[in-house]
Amino acid sequence: MDKVRIDRRWLPLNALRAFEAVAKHGSFTGAANALLISQSALSRHVISLEKLIGVQLFERRPHALVLTKAGQHLLPAVAKSFDRLEYSLDEIKSSAAPTLRTLRVQMPPTFAVHLAVPILRDFRRANREVEIDLVSPYGVGPPPSDVDVAVVYAKPTVTGSVSDLLWPVKLGILCHPDLAERHAGKDLATFMRDNELIHVRIADLPRHYVWGQFVRQANLGALAYERGLVFDTALLAVQYALSGEGLALVDLNLFRDDIEAGRLVRPFADTLDDGFGYYLITDPEALSDTAIALFRSWLIEHFGQRKTGDEARMRLAVSNE
Image 1 (cartoon, rainbow, N blue to C red):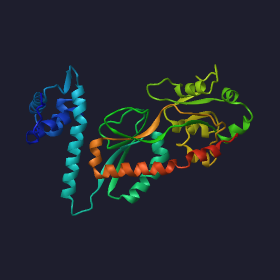
Image 2 (image 1 turned 135 degrees about the vertical axis):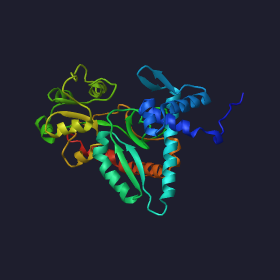
Image 3 (image 1 turned 180 degrees about the vertical axis):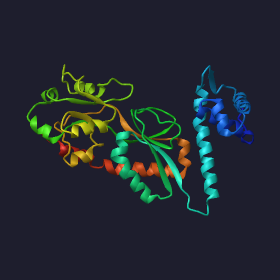
Image 4 (image 1 turned 90 degrees about the vertical axis):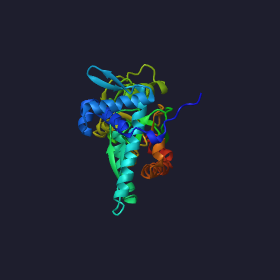
């Protein structure tokens, strides 16, 4: 039996706007105040939309509204569609003046600090008409629906988004040069045993997960690794290592500049590939947006060039070969 499609001539734009506002504010009262309409009118809009599509969009709890699976599926499409309408109308309205397009971009904290400044500076020099609104939340997993483009630290997953691998993460031990010199000549197990381990917390995984993976891969047996400091980001872990103490197990590509400048050294060549990588995530519908497509292509090209020759340089940076 053929599905009955909704004719675009009868798209309930006011009801969709009401749905987006309720989802954004988490209440009918807040949404009604934002849209300057009565709460009863707002409620009628949402109910009419639910009747049109035949499913509930909100789970109405005593003290909260929660999006159902259908609501979670609809919200990003509605928000992005209204965003594009708004941008297009603004561009037409301001056609006599230079137009600016603001992209909301998400990047992990360490990535943002080490790479975002030079990347975004160069991009803005080449694309003055595009402004960047950068957000940098902690954690792993899919980006929220209110960003245009996101760089995420994650394992490969199958989603409805376009996912471009910028680079696979390769973890190696980094430490201060003075620390490496003081412990020169020791084997890996002794070197780790005699120094403090610096851990980077990954959301939803055990506190000492990364070092545990490294110990198992290197066949270090019963070496105690559940000790030392735990930081929320690799940036903080490396800052501690730069103070002269501790061993950080972090992405070598991300801290390449510190290695090349001699601020950090690799006392051992051992590495760990734990399946994570930095991925560029884009909604497939957003690729029709010129600014988003431009930023995506530019970022992919930038990191394609950056990766060339990285492995050779990393090998030269190993201090005890």
